[in-house]
Image (cartoon, rainbow, N blue to C red; front, side, top):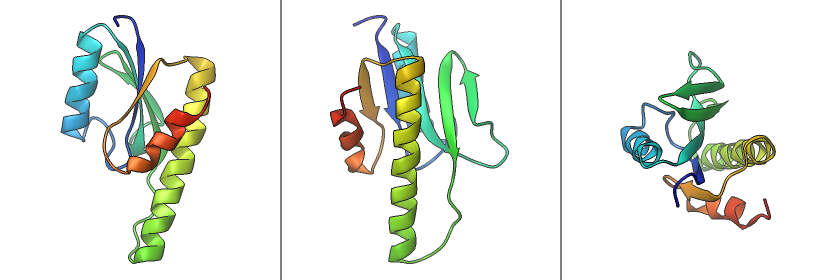
Amino acid sequence: MKNSRILILLENLPLPFDRRAWMQAVALKESGRSVIVICPRFKEQKGFEIKDGINIYRYMIPPATKGIVSYMFEFLYSFVMTFILSVYICTRHGFDAIQSGKPPDTFFIIGLLPF
């Protein structure tokens, strides 16, 4: 499906630092797809950037803490930020498919929504 728009959701690392996810995004772009990525960002990174023709939307990484409550907060925060950016991207660009690049596997919930 050339010319399709792929939305990639990441939770662990920002692009392009996540090399495996970056290589997947580049491969999709080189095969003729339009690629949009949602991922966390480091302080020095921009919230939005186009790199090598790939649209990258980033949200601030939550502060590092320890323990199960911290993990749950980080997970919930990342899910909410990814959801908000997914809605924004849907209204601005649209997309044809969603790829969840890494855990958490619960990002499939975003794919169930009627975008």
